[in-house]
Image 1 (tube, rainbow, N blue to C red):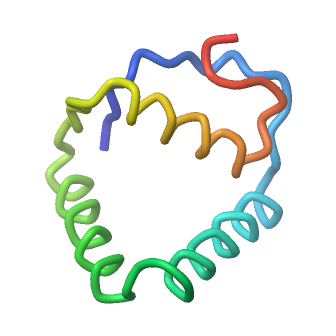
Image 2 (cartoon, helix red, strand yellow):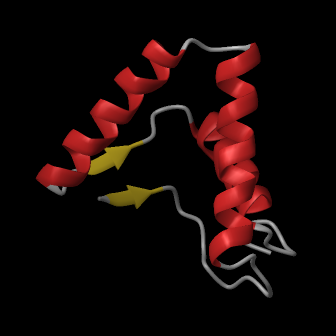
Length: 85
């Protein structure tokens, strides 16, 4: 799967392996426990699996939303600096 968001990958530090995985697990757990049904999350995962299988490009139509999602993703991964800085 390829992502188009205009961001760069020149970040100083990131969490590795288990730490990043644990942060993502925590986020998903809280999201599904408190905010979004597991069925909706599974539908989203199915879409992502399909995109990955077909090696399709994701086109973000809402630029600011895509940027915010990237910021949150980088924070969860433990990057010291946000994308593009």
